[in-house]
Amino acid sequence: MRKFLFAALTLTLLINAANLRADGIDATYGANLPSVYDEGDKVPNFKGKEFKVLHTGVLGAGKEFILTRVVYENNAKCFAVGYARGQNSDLDVFVTESDSGNDIDSDTLTDNFPVAEWQSGTGSNVVNIRVRNVGSQPCSYVLLGNW
Image (cartoon, rainbow, N blue to C red; front, side):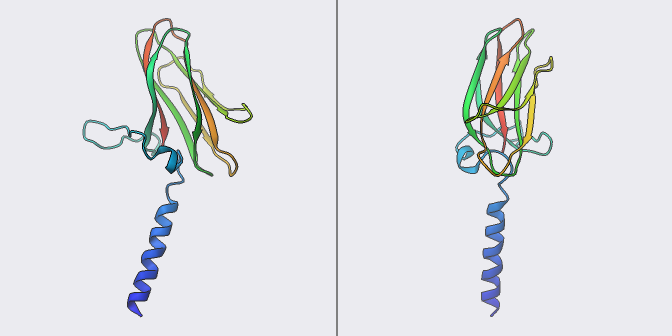
């Protein structure tokens, strides 16, 4: 009887642990994306979230990049975060629904650290994320999504 109860409890814990990943980027979509690590090989947190690298690159002044069909989990607090380095750079981020093109969130403040955040629903959670350098000089950037 004890073995049965232990097995049932273990199975319940495993099932619940599998469900805990509904916290950002879809597990299948993000499984092979690189994580963001600091010097101590720990994933840094922003607002209590861990992040995966969605894209890196260099944007000229006035140029933009669009990452299409990024999949987030259902009912999750979602973030798309940019970080730019470069003199006189100003990075903006825009998130839209992939299918309809409807705006979800954006950050157009004059800074190098734009953050878009939203609550995903229960339907399609596939988004497009656009980053734009509205600064006067080229900048290198990284686009992150919470994991």
